[in-house]
Image (cartoon, rainbow, N blue to C red; front, top):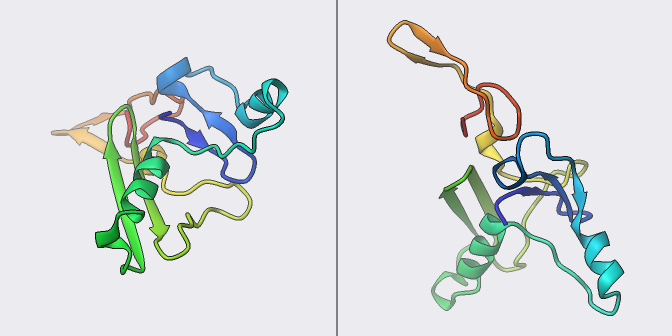
Length: 127
């Protein structure tokens, strides 16, 4: 899933590319628990799943950390601590590496461009 996910609680924070710029946070773990409370759900997004995939490969097990960069419906970077298979996340917000939502100054020649991001923000790298 190409969306920012709070790693603490499984809430999808914004899924503009999937559900449009007016999308609200969605408690995916809560919704899944209502249907299958007998399952322990781990909610990660596409770039975290990709980083976990590489971290589990034998040729990378000796590394301390690896990072994965994706350029698709958005731009994201994920760093994972290989030995622990742990993604260090922001202690309060629960996210890491959502670099596509960094505001940038962009111009073509002398014309400044202010583009709207799929999340609704302005001048994000994703835009």
